[in-house]
Image (tube, rainbow, N blue to C red; front, side, top):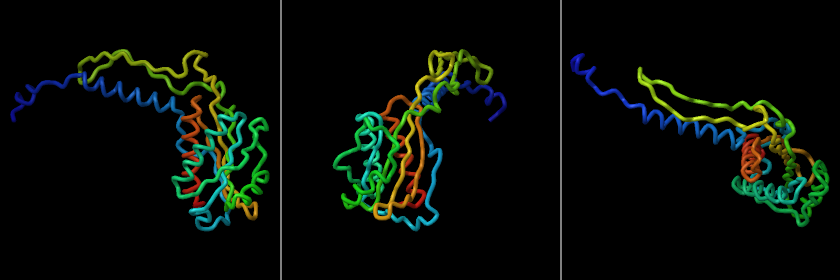
Length: 222
C-alpha cells in the first residue's frame, strides 16, 4: 500500500468515541452513587482461629439497628450471604427490640445461640456513619467540547455529586460492624467494619453484607 493510499483512508468519526465516553462517565457516576465498598475498613481475626472452624456451621444471625425496618433488612441480607457461603443461618425467636439501640455486645445473644443449637453467633450492628457527614465531594465531571485526531467533537456531559451544599455531602450513609462469636465458649473469632455512602439502605446493606461475609471467608472463618 502506497503512502498516498494510506492517507486516502477516511478518518474515523467522533460519534462512536463520544458515545463510549458518555457511557463511561455514566458508569462512573452510577458506581459512585451506589457507594460500593471494595473491602472492609478494618478487620480482626483470633490468632488461634484454626482452619475454617465454622465451615458449614449453623449460625444464629442477629442484627442491631435503631429502626425495625433496617433491622429486618439487615437480617435478610446477612442471612442470604451466609447461605451463599454454605452456612445455615437461624434467626432469633425474638429479635432484639430496635428501640433498645445498638451496642449490647455478643454476650447478650450467645445464650440464644446455644438454645437455637447454633455453633456460633453472627452479630451485625448497623448505625449511621457520621464520618461521612460534610466531607468534600470527590466526584465532579464537566465536559464541553474536546477533540480527537485534530477533529472536534462536542459533548453535553456533566456530572456533579452531590448537588448543592457547596460541594459537601449531607447524607451520612451507614456503617456495619459484624462479628462471629463461638456459642459454646463465647470466644470472639472474627470482626470487621465496613460502610457505604449511599442513602439507599436496601442497596447499601446488600453491599455491606457481601463485603463483610467475603472478608470473613477470606480470613478462613468458614
